[in-house]
Length: 366
Image (cartoon, rainbow, N blue to C red):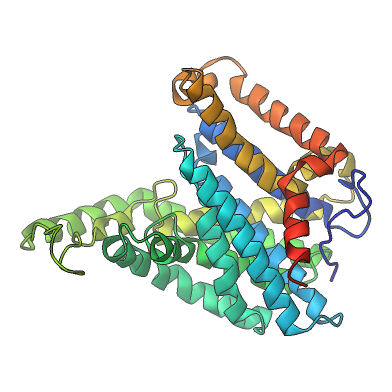
């Protein structure tokens, strides 16, 4: 298996031998999708809403497993845990800094950092065992995080861990699926084709169920909730008497970033199909992958930049959500092109990115 390594030369390495170019490109595609979702969403590209984050989490799980390959090359488990902890702390600090800006978009970096720590418990598992854990999490994580949304409201760290659809627990099924894939030979066409086939096998039936049966199921749950005696939470009571009732009906909505099992399975199925297709075509389309790979290699910097941009525009009296760039002809294409161009520029000047700071911070814990 090829280990994902950063560029130590200071030069662009978007097509550097030894990296999984397709994985970098798919991660970059997810980042582009985030920008389109936040700045240029319209009816034509509405499918990116929520699904881009699932695609990114899948790639992150793969990279996490590949990062762990260093233990097989001689790195001690203690050194690996220290490196993961350092990475989690750095990402967490960046996330809370972005939350402080109070922008119009939800910041998921603290939950992302929590996933890095939770995944340490699974590093010794085989690919088969990780897939089994992921299957259990797809069923168990949504109701648990919904309970957490009720119990952990206002508790920052616990909320990031398991408090709702943007918590670590909510994304953990996708992340663990990626960890399992990272144990496999992703350069094998057979593995890539199997990945795409598995994605289709998951996406099609779950989407059909969501279209034809999910609305009725949700209505039944809502009817049950209406008949259940409602207790108004007392904000001045001791915990957990000050918490709101669990919103069980949200588990039966396949809305973007809703955290339901159906939304996760639909998004994961599509993500597996995209990643499998990219892996199959990696040797045929390297020149097309490289610009997206540059975005993927600078994913943290570009993710943070959108919040800084929205904050700066708000200070200037311009609300990003009111621009509606997606309503203009090819507005979404323009936004996507600008993100790709920014990624290529950052690849030529890596000293400017947060990735450089992350590597420096990790080095302090070695």
